[in-house]
Image (cartoon, rainbow, N blue to C red; front, side, top):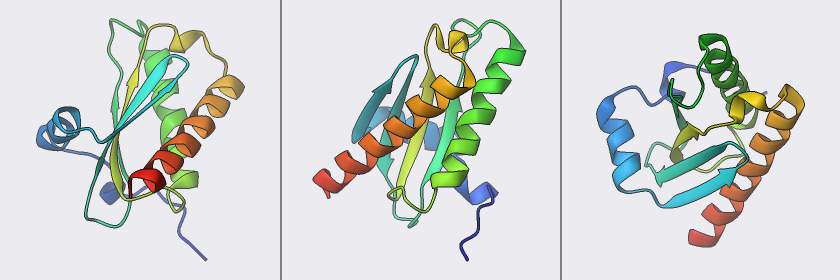
Length: 121
């Protein structure tokens, strides 16, 4: 059985990791109220970083809810995603989406990311 945890190795931790993705993004996927940038890595598994600014999502409760839902989505799909570093950026209006819509948007983004990664590989 495959592990469904979310250990440190699945996270982008340093500013250098984020900068590397921002400067050299290979893949870009849009969803309603969010965008994901991805860069190939050599680790054999995906890693996730989140950027949720106060300018776009005012309340801490809303920022934390968004981050929690994105992490949960990645945790459940980590074995289906290609080996990429992903940075998910929250846009204005993402806090207006309910959980169901946010789950659908994330599911669609991960499917598009897989499709684009297979096309590029």
